[in-house]
Image (cartoon, rainbow, N blue to C red; front, top):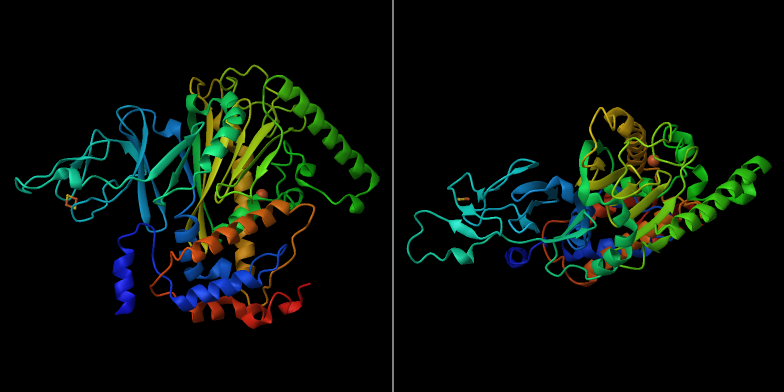
Length: 471
Ligand code: FES
Ligand SMILES: [Fe+2]
């Protein structure tokens, strides 16, 4: 009964479900025993209960990148996205503003919009035709009587924010305010690429058979690149993501030195032309964590294509220099983006369940670029389609290993996996903050499941960080 009471209480607060007190204790124990510089205990990758906590405390409380403004160019244009149990519709209103709403009718709760994208004049519920305008107001509800106050039944809003055309939403009642700082820092970097005047030339949805954190870990390092990404390592320098100098031969050291020189000279050249390029890193010291850096591209220096040349003849915005390398922009918890002189590639990782993640990739070109004349979709997408497929196989391998009893957390390279560690630190900090805030109150998460779901692989929870032979 107490659980039911708490459940009822939870229903008044968006984004909260319940975890039992025992479960919260088990999760705290898992967080406490995590050794910095090591991958996580198996339940973080396999447990449905931790997945539930992730969706509530991470995806329910931080700013989540979901789409780009060019997907909703005109009033009434919308896209929908699912985040855990939430369905959200993001649309352009009549004043050209962005709006986001819970995709749930205020009558008897039917899901309102069923397509992934489209255009509407008003939002009409299929069930009994309650009708909402683009401002979210209920404007028509037949047979409800003269006393019925439509103003009490508008769509529930979701916070939405565009950063230079990249659209973020936040399900929390009070979203993290430091998105302002990210927007202030990133807008000068992104503005030259003028995303708002681009169009989506291609989209690819890929299900990675792994926990979303394995998708993100894989994204935050290029340790695996030289061994797995023959296409990506044509434009990308393998040394751009770190190396251990003590283990390199003379030739490799010379290549690394050449790359370091290129970074310094390229950054100086780009910045002198008014193209911000220097590294900014707030991946683990802010709620709205992010990092950016403009990195040189190999060979012609132009774009992330198989021949390193621009994929679209029409450069973005007012750009005239095709050799701008690639501006990378990473956000916590779930996105990464590459901005070149001719095109933009954006990625969002949407968790599906504990062991499956949707990776949605979009390629954007100038809105006036003509397919078949200015760009070819196959050429535009070939590097990242190949790379995504390779990454999906790697994540699936990692997930398969995390499921086995022999799995135990392993050490990150201090030279090439620093950003993986920053991701984990940020994730665990946010999880701890969520647990401390008491957002998880009730429900059916059983701590026994957590303990048996993976801790057995490396020994009992009481074994502490040194259990299983870790240093
Ligand atoms: S549930 Fe939407 S109008 Fe009835
Ligand atoms: Fe990769």
